[in-house]
Amino acid sequence: MNWLELQNPEICHRCYWAYPEDYDHIAMQQTRRVDILWSGEEVSIYERLKEKTIELQKELPAYIKEIIERHLT
Image (cartoon, rainbow, N blue to C red; front, side, top):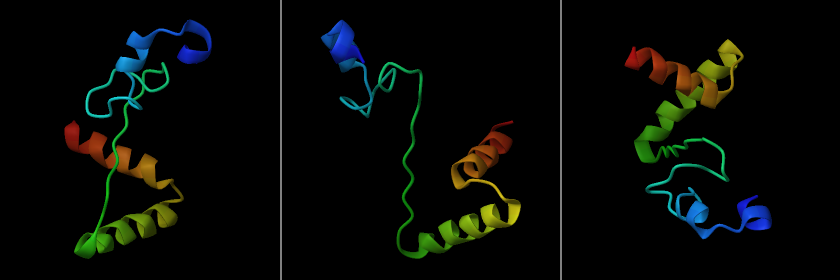
């Protein structure tokens, strides 16, 4: 959107796609992103999470957000 309409390089400098380590927005939307990887023995944790979401009829990202929110309150 920025480069198609506004063409402001400063907006690009604060975008996730340009600087994922320090950003204010993703494509000019107030959004935050976290990528989580499970490897090796951790894969079993992922599989348990996946099974639980199927049981609860929830999407995995939504369920993970719920767990984090409960932990923070």
